[in-house]
Amino acid sequence: MSRSPMVVRTVPALRRAVEALRGRKAATALVPTMGALHDGHVSLVRLARRRAQRVIVSIFVNPTQFAPSEDFGSYPRTWKADVAKLAAEKVDLIWHPDVKTMYPDGFATRIVPEGPATAGLEDRFRPHFFGGVATVVGKLFTQCRPDFAIFGEKDFQQLRVVAQMARDLDLGVKVIGSRTVRERDGLAMSSRNVYLSPEERRAAPELYRVMKEAARRIRAGEEIKPAVAGGAELIEQAGFKLDYLEVRHAETLTPIASIKDGPLRMLVAARLGTTRLIDNIAV
Ligand code: PAF
Image 1 (cartoon, rainbow, N blue to C red):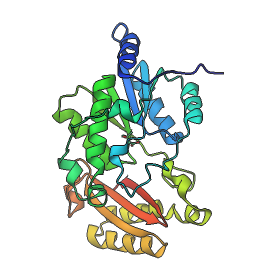
Image 2 (spheres, helix red, strand yellow; image 1 turned 90 degrees about the vertical axis):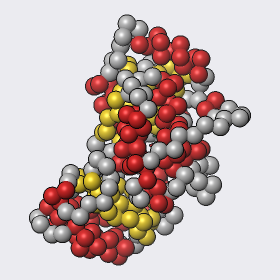
Image 3 (cartoon, helix red, strand yellow; image 1 turned 45 degrees about the vertical axis):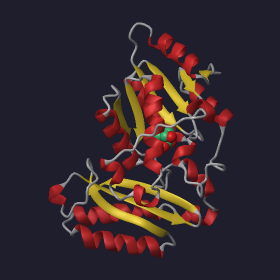
């Protein structure tokens, strides 16, 4: 049986634990999560391990990135299973603060990201989201002071937002993106996939299939606009309510008209019943 990682819940204990972990200049990598860990998170931890001798995983369901109408209260919380998974990966430290520790009474400072955070993708549908993410990730970076931080490419706009923030604020953390891990049928792994009914689960991989076909058509010479419009129609026909299907510049996330102006990224968000799915691929 693997030994359980050390769990810390207060900032002073975290500081002591991080100091001890760094020892004589061991590199550290942080994997920020909200728990409900799946194989996608495990792949982030493994990438962290390849980059650094010491791996810290934070588990904190961050209230400031949820709107009042969203699923903060019902977000899956699977603490015991999460710790077992991290123990199997020989993670060194789990940072597991409670809400009062992260946002004590009187907390009044918020990071307001721009650039990729205002690209008109997720921010159009979840205007509160990137302010909450940037604020909590900014805190996680200053609390854990990692050399590297690993984020999944599945939340592609989030990855761009935190990389930009780390650069802009000289946080001294190298942000690294990790490839999306998919189920066998192509559905991107997500903690929210547990919300899908069996029927919705069968329809869900259509998002990835349609994106791959639209990307293939663009690479084969079709213009972006009709390829995306065709894809959007197929997604709606499969029973989704589409928020967006867009092709953007892969670095800046600005709109793009031609494959010549690449590199390109295709991004989608759509709802199946009450579950909102997001995904993206390189074009
Ligand atoms: O991607 C997530 O799980 C969250 O947005 C993050 C980065 C842990 C911040 O709460």
